[in-house]
Length: 126
Length: 230
Image (cartoon, rainbow over all chains, first blue to last red):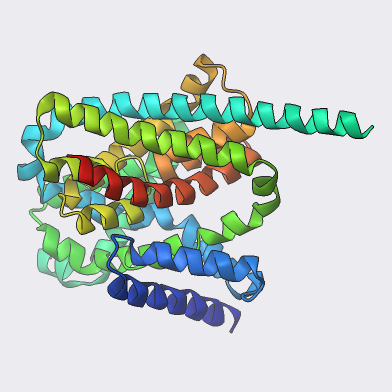
């Protein structure tokens, strides 16, 4: 009964997400409206964690498998993709290295700065 | 025999699950980054379809039921997000700044590449969501009238590559803070990179999951704004 209820809640939120996606003229996918609804619900305790937890964790765990059919679809679009493939591949690799490095460096600097400020603040209190 | 295989709606699901299982086994056995389960599953499925002359439609007839779960699964990313709320609260400014810088870096790199090679608008918007989770990325490309399959290809390449290089790259640039490591991986290479972050540690894994959702959301807005530029 627990799993049925949890799956029901998750599907209900997904459905509301799709309704919002249809009604709101923004390129925001239904899944993101659903994610925001669930996050807001959990944070405000309107939706208890126990109402989604196990089934949610299961869905997240099997998520990589859900990407396979779309990825195999590359086969169908190989004709479109072929002329672009090599430049896109090189660009994707280079860009990923840059994005990861910039994000990591900036986050690390900011985290350290925040920690310093916190310890300064604690120092003045003492 | 071939009809028996392709007429069954379970065929597509079975082939997807078993090739992924094979990938997990190979990964365990050889511990090499190239044995990425998703990469193996996709490559093995393509080889199987081509070898037995099974067209994509009959495979997808069954496999679509796995794709069907992608929206509910993405909705559930709210759960780790909520569970790490306290860690998130104490570092939220650094986390937001980091993810935003990554999202903008990705978009600017796409714009630069587009201008350099004179791509058209449709190809440009196709590349904008390349670093984020497929569920959101496909949605953005669809809405902006790009080529969804090319976005999907780029997202997969990004994820597999991020998963392969993250450990080495972060060490190279002396990024040692666990929060920063997780945010860097999740922002640059979504769920597939996050699998690696989970191996690195609990904080890295949690922060990386968080970055999947936040980078995905920020990219929705960044992609809309950047789609006006070119």
